[in-house]
Length: 165
Image (cartoon, rainbow, N blue to C red; front, top):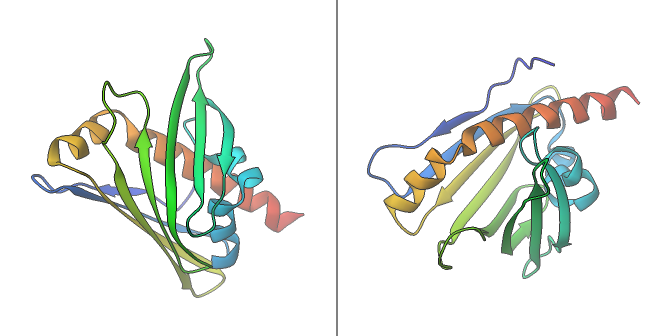
């Protein structure tokens, strides 16, 4: 499926942050739910060549989450964090940390804003603030843009099915 909506990742040189923006052809409450319901999250989050397993997912303010992406050889790539704010359907603030680095502490603070648009559409803006420019650049070079774009395409397909059913 080719979507008319485009995911944009903006990472200005020398800054510790990046922005992900995307519009979806679905109402804001549905888009927000897709980011906070583990059963829905399993259906779209992650690159197409990886499967996903939710270890824990408590999207409430103060809740913890952890999930694994699994490649075709069974290698697992873990991610975890804490939800700092769950303000449905407007905003999520949470931390994100990849478990595959040689040392811990490379925590990212993510703020996701869900803006209602006309015609039952939603604009998502995610600001990710990293511990350092090097951490941010490492994430960008890791191929995260491909993973985010593929995830959003899968989410488009999911919204299309939800609206048709």
